[in-house]
Image 1 (tube, one colour):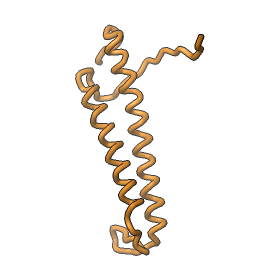
Image 2: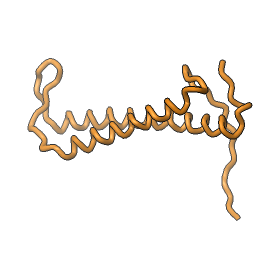
Image 3: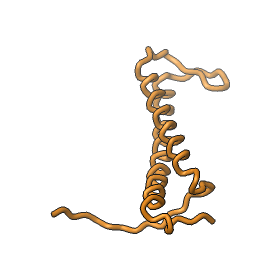
Image 4: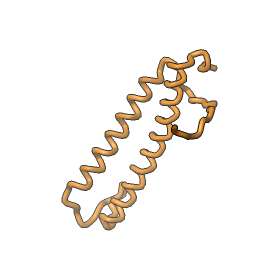
Length: 103
């Protein structure tokens, strides 16, 4: 016999209607795939010695790449957090639609 933790979650998805749930999931999954593809592209390229900022100043490529990976990580975390909430809402919408309301 298995064991686990049951929980109830009351969530809120700002500016997302019930009819948009699947579309939002597809969009954020596509965003995550794009981020992974960009990360792979950075890993596969031959790195230059320096990168330039928007003002034309040069700085070591390693610093640029570190910052870029931080940005990717933050975006992935935000998308993943929202995707989890979207998945939960979609599950409740399918199993207990009376428990999902817009307002």
